[in-house]
Image (cartoon, rainbow, N blue to C red):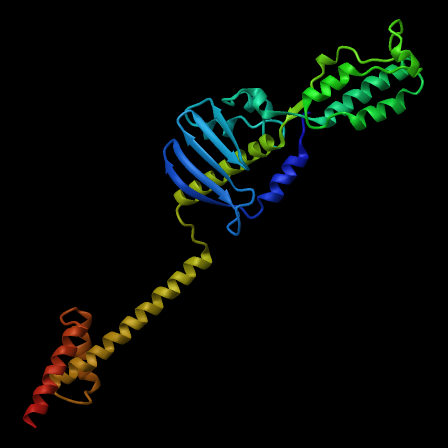
Length: 294
């Protein structure tokens, strides 16, 4: 099979709320975890070290080995199946290509039906074969490849059932050369993991790019910044005017200094000759002395 759209759809559905957590990120040594914050269903980990990527998901762990940076390997090796390349990637598994494969009962049923249909079209199948094959498929082992192959090798159909016990009679129908049949396909968990690798690396790259990109300001951002700066400057100026009033009280010994007095004091504040704190402290000392002599 060259296409697995149902796995791509399943992965998208089961990881819709996944977020990335960086547990370790030091050069080629990475440990990334992807999961729904509300639960750990369908969570997976991507772990890299030089020359190796380990993908852990749902009790399965697939170990890939190829290039020093395995993230770089998977970035450039996406294939024909929704950005995954299971055939080539399975060759990089430490357990070999077969470790990604599982017996597929649907393939077994399809092979049997195609074999019988060809014989029926060619006139090589006896009467009643369709009914017998339907019964055979219903009884054949569905989870074990060895059992399925034993069933194929042991199948023998006699139009007349009495002939089964006559050693001089040959079956009217049998399967031949079924050892050539490939009854395996990629395990769904391996295909799911391939999607997880591609998706996880993309999320990692997005986060890295966002962290290294300077903050961009729109025209609205610039306008807001200018308004904020102007407001801060106005507040600062109001504070300096208040300080000037205090300074005028100190310099001119008046509880209600005039505008000229305030202007003179404000010039001193703006020129940095005196700080607001210094003015307040001096004014407090002056008033304390006045109360003491009263």
